[in-house]
Figure 1 (cartoon, rainbow, N blue to C red):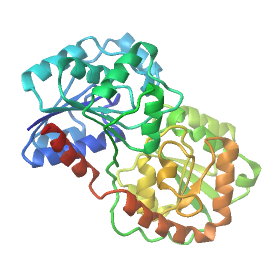
Figure 2: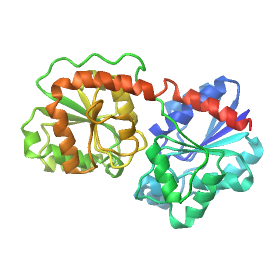
Figure 3: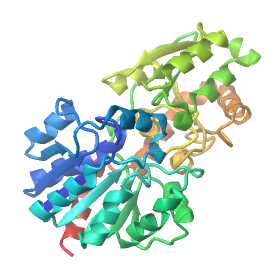
Figure 4: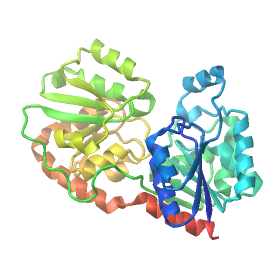
Length: 382
C-alpha cells in the first residue's frame, strides 16, 4: 500500500516527528511504500538519512521562502504560523496526483498547523488522518481558518492525540465532537525495562529540566523565579537545563539578573538521555503548554520522580504524591508549593522513582510507532 506522510514541523527535525518516523520505518519494513514530505527540510539530518536508507522517499515540500517571509514566520509562535509559501499546496497536489496514496498522514507539531493540507485532502477526496502533538487552551484556530479546521477534523478518517487533555481542548476549540479519535504515545529514547541505578550519594540535590528553551511553551522563566526565592537559595539544589532554543539568551540573562549562577547549569542538548538520569535525582518541568512531555516519560522509565506543572497530559501520567508531584498551575507560587512537597519527601525519591517506572510501563507501550503503523494499515484498507 502507498502511504504519504506530511510533516508541518517548522524546524528540520523536532521531537513531534519521532512518532510518524517510527511508524514510517515500520510500514516500510512491512513492504509498504512510504513517501515523506516536510515543510522544513534538511537532507543531511541523521533521521532523514535513516529514513532514506530504509527505503522511504523523503523530500522537502518547498524551496527556501523569501527572507521577509522567513522573518515573519520566526516572529510568530509555532501554533500561529499559518503563513504558507505559495507553492506548497500546489506541490502537495502534484504529489497526490502522481502517487495516489491509499492514506495521507498529516503530522502536526500542534493541533492546527497542518489544517491547510488536511483541508486540501478533504476537498480532493483523498483519505487522510490527523496527528496532533500539542494543544494550548488560549490558541484557538485563527478565524479565517476555523471553518476549514472544523471540516478537516470532521472529514479525517482518524484523529490522533498524545493526551486526553489535547483531545478535549481541540474539541472545545472547534465546538465539535470528534467521532474517530485515539490517544497515542510517542517513542522514547531510554530502555523500556529496568530503571537506572540511583545516582551516587551527593550533598547536592540535582534536578534536570529537559525541555526546549522556549518560554511560551516550556516556562523556564517560572522555574528561575522559584529558584530565586530566599528559601531555595539556601538549600543545596542545583538545576541543569538540558535543551536548546531561541529563548536561551533571554533565560541566561534572566538567571544572571537573579544571581543564580551558582545553582543553575546550561547543559545544552545531549545525545544520550540516560546519561542525564545517571547523574540527576529528579525531573522538574515548568511548562505552560504540552502534549505529553517525552522528558516526563523518559524520566519515569529511568526511575526518576518528577515535579511538574499540569500542562497537557502531565497529570494523566504523573500521579501526584505517588509517582511524583504535580503543581496546581504553571505559576511561581504553585510550582514552589509542589517543589516544597517534593523536598519534604526527598528521602523517599528512590522509592517514588521505582513506582514511577512501573506506572509508566503500564501506560506507555514499548513500540508506539509500530502500533500506529498497524492502525494506519487498517484505516488504509477501508
